[in-house]
Image (cartoon, rainbow, N blue to C red):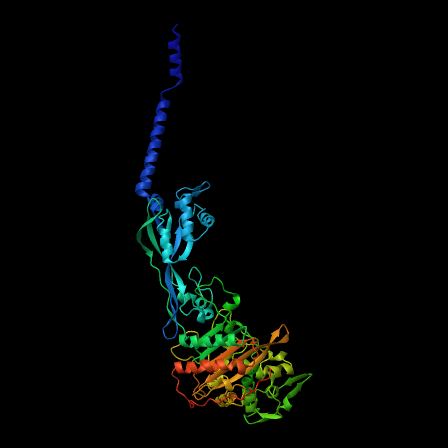
Length: 584
């Protein structure tokens, strides 16, 4: 028997032919499935592969929008956006791994860091996540530095046009305008208040990259950027410049902690100037203190001192309790309310109501205030805008403090009449004086230019407002508390204020000196409020420290606005050697 032949027959019997056929059919079906899948992806449903392909050479990037410009009321630019370049990279194109840089070697990484002015470790950290398609390396570079980066011709590194805010007037408008952040969004001041109007809307565009990750072509805009709106402010650049200059000089001369000044258009309530000192340069904020950034004119509150007396006396005039010529017993300068005593610096046995304003008598003001029901006095203060926001919408604005009349004690009612026990901000105080400049009408304030004056609300009768206007004019006369507030060629009215500063619940020998006034008296055009915080060079009365600032700023503002004279040019009378001082 042949053993080999027998073995062959056995194997053939164990492997039937249908199995080979089945295997062939399965292979054929697999091939058909692959072919069908290819046809489906490349012919019927090719979006997926096309998208994957595009990711290799195409990318959508954001296009920054131009932020709107802020101008003063005369069209002069106060805040403008200038183009800058930001450097960005695509870590997925650079392909950082644990071993280091794959497509960007170590030497290139060092060159990039040097061109950006960054540490190598910081650049490496930003590029570490290779799953990301976009990361900023450094933003808002000057053109020369950005050009140095691009000349390195590194893979995956590109420029993006952005905008950086520039403030031509620098520190003069700093706290009022505020500033923007790296994304060109408002962070402080009017930049924050007007963010919605100033900010544009980002656009987008598709760009094409080469195999090294370089942008080689702009493939077109998907959505064009929408620029922000330009906004005209109420501020007058020339008036602001003068106000800031005079305020700065006064703070430095009197070695004060700080100061603020507000200039209003008396007829419309528009803010023509709002300045603070110390200040800072918003174009270079690398070393600025929180104190320099404070907009003290709206964010800080203080006891207004004798600048409150006209409101208490106006309330009594309106109520028919007194007339300008009514004689008040001023008790030789000492008046007791319960177990507390109120003093006058210059004792007088009696003064008329008009003289109480002129001489700034605390005793006279207290006695008149106590003749009124507390609710009447509270309503007068409230109607004049105290204890509430001015409506400026400025971020961080303080409302001040005006307690409910039901909680007042007699001594508190008396002291509030001369500005103790009540707190205000400077813009609030300046606004309140619109009642005397506008025949009893309180005007709303505006930081935007108005086409026509806003309608206010009536607080006092026209008669009372005119009577107070005459009394306030006497304050700047030679026998008043503020002859240094006089302005050549114009009749001026106003009121001094000097108040001890509170430290907790106790008054200290540190002072706030203030003056609020308006001119010309015949037809008021500007209201100027000045506050000097902690003068420490020997003088601290409002008539000595704040009144001269008022005089300089008011004179310049009236000339800039071409306001006609209503007094002879030689109307300024030299003040006496010893200026009458208000009680504090």
